[in-house]
Image (cartoon, rainbow, N blue to C red):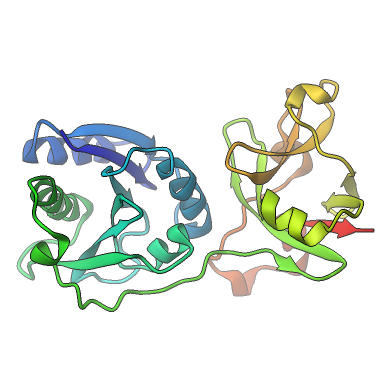
Length: 273
């Protein structure tokens, strides 16, 4: 019974998320479907990479992960199936896979799309469903797709670093409006080198220590901690940091239109002393 996770930016306001599940179950009623999220921000690949990377790490080897995000950035003539560290990923060839893995995939094939068929989410899901069933039945990736494919490559969003500071981007805002920054604990400690620090955002908001839990500060006070995925998180105990401070998720869309003042609400700096 293959285990499948579903991640998308299609929302749940209409039929499409449910129809995707119907297409999969029509292919094989033994598929076990697990939702990760259908509420990713449209066209926000850094957020999608963060969510998929850190959710899929917790699944058993052999799990298939359908990532229906930014599917039609390019007009597709093929889709990708990837095998990496025991996990399978099914997604568009839009550069997202290298952002998720933070390295080249170990094995990847192109799943060709029939030129006579429509290009929409459900048609792509049917292609993935057939490929998953074939791999689950014991076929190799090289037997069901083109292993000679040259995939789109994009680098994951990294913080800017100098000896004096790190500057990270807000890559996700969670249900509680806690703000997640693309600075990991390992990156922070490597750059810190035992020095004191100040986390500065929105020009004049400062945090100079880490909390272990939200309850380490009084209700309504701001705090910083490293979350369960190991990323820097800025929060307010029983409050909403993003809304109160006017912080916004970073987006690569229309970057040329962003003003410097707007970027102040999407970036966080850590100064070392």
